[in-house]
Image (cartoon, rainbow, N blue to C red):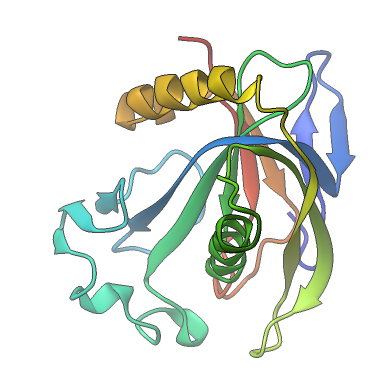
Length: 212
């Protein structure tokens, strides 16, 4: 994708490409992950040499505790980035759809998501899956001079209390099933056009989760 274009794109059922910079729905689940490639990652289906499904402990080479791993330190990658890519995954259920959409957030946007969820809890006593939110992506530039898609998180409205138990059931169901097998079976990919040549900001992408 071209650098600096702040939008997501997704292939529709008829093969056409849909482009958008806003997405709205309910967060069913979110987690932090990490991926490390010994050779420079250039996309495609090349599996990482080391990966962490919880952002805490890596499996592979070098493996082990992510906090103490030298490849998780800023400066270990290009342009003062992390050699091991840190990505926050958000599973967002959109209105009218049966399965959630996976949104991969870069480190900067990951921090914003965490802050937003904490503010929901501290200011309104609401969990991340008790509100409808909107994600809006706009062009921005990092301190290192790289263009990327900056994601803003906006609360749209609270979910009625009588509906929340059903949402929690969905959260429990998907959180129990998310793992390596599921993530290897994504049927559609939605990737942003905020791909940065230096890797300071990993691309923001969304992917459709397949039916179980």
